[in-house]
Image 1: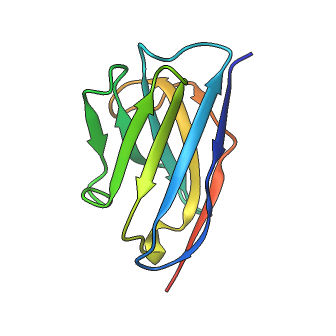
Image 2 (image 1 turned 90 degrees about the vertical axis):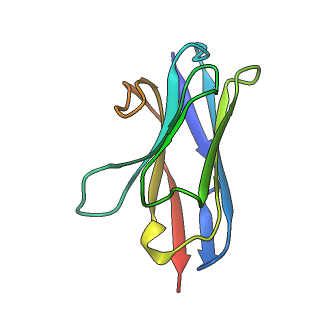
Length: 119
């Protein structure tokens, strides 16, 4: 059974930083894109960032470019999202995703982790 488990969410003041991690189990995703998607109540899920299987290609939403950094460790089957200079509009549930393409999420999802940024 494939599982993606996120950790690292929490509450922070604007301008602060958080680091999200996602650990995959049940299969390896070293040949697949992994990424992060976020969602706020009443809105559709929004692409945040993705990273290729080798880690050599990354894609970011315009809203997070220069502030967020995605990385992966294929030896540990993990993907992370370092979030700096957080803004209140970054408040959302962040979901780890795997098995998709650069801009399209795949079929594997984590349970989500809440990030709250206060002004």
